[in-house]
Amino acid sequence: MLLVRRLSTKALGQVRVLGIETSCDDTAAAVVTGDGRVVSETNRHQHSVHASYGGIVPGLAAAHHQANLPLVLRETLQQAGLSISDVDAVAVTRGPGMAASLGVGVAAAKALAAVHGLPLIGVHHMEAHALMARMGREDVVQFPFLCVLVSGGHTMTLVAHDVSSYTTIGSTRDDSVGEAFDKVARDLGLPWPDMQEGGGLGPALEQIAMRGDALRFPLPVPMDKSTSAVSPDFSFSGLKTHVRRMLESGAFDPRIPQDQADVAAAFQRAAVAHLRKKTALACRHARAMGVNITCVVASGGVASNAAVRQALADVAAKEGVPLECPPPRLCTDNGVMIAWAGVERLRRGLLDSYSFDFIQRWPLDHLKETPLNCP
Image (cartoon, rainbow, N blue to C red; front, side, top):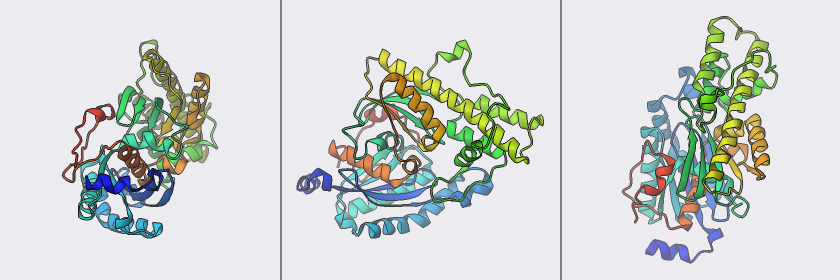
């Protein structure tokens, strides 16, 4: 009750939520207001730590979260000109993600909230991506909408009925689109850019594809046969394997820049065509469910890809609705999206106790069924 009284004395737009994200390899935090203003944000990437391994090493990621998070939190609050006592609630990624990494963020958030008597909000990582386009634009991005979540760990279409209420339409049967981008980039020998914003193998492939001829190496669009074309699910494993077999057969030489660019362009063209077809099918499924979507929202790291955005914009236009996306820098994992999801849940009184734990595997459409650990 003390927490509710404290918040009730403030106008909603003045409420400040501290968001903490440590689900994978980004250590991030941000302060966001109830009206969607980003007061401050900090993000520490680990690209250089994991580049030589060809993927994220869970133990290393958790160790670097432990080292980085105190400094990230301090920097975020200093940028905002705030102390922790000026914050109105703490939100943290509860899951899904890598267990050790999630544990670092959850432990820190619980300690901060408990010591300072602040409301604590456990956030579903994918819900945070889905809600990101609504930040400060709730009058534009209204429920229900079709969300296309495309990232390194997930590829799915779902109807967002409201906060905490989702119906999955299609999901990947194997690799995520982001994982496929990364693996093809490795086969092409592309370097992992060590950048604070926009780094990673996927963006590297997108950049080199701009110089390529997508028609030089025709690649099949996944699930294009009659038996699988009607399914709203995705599949990227076969496309990724096709490129690997081309490499092994000598069809292209990754040491030749033009070969790299042409294969990258061909892969991106086929992957984007697959996303376009399955998103259009998801729109039809939503209509069959009796849902009149207000827009199509694309979020997750791969939603920063310009070709993906254009393809989804085309689908949305044919449906007579707009495509809504967060700014590219907020498509990848960040603290802003966790803080904003915290705002959305705080408005609805969806708070957690200081004793909740992380959830490593957590389907988004099970979120409404997850019991709240109410304070």
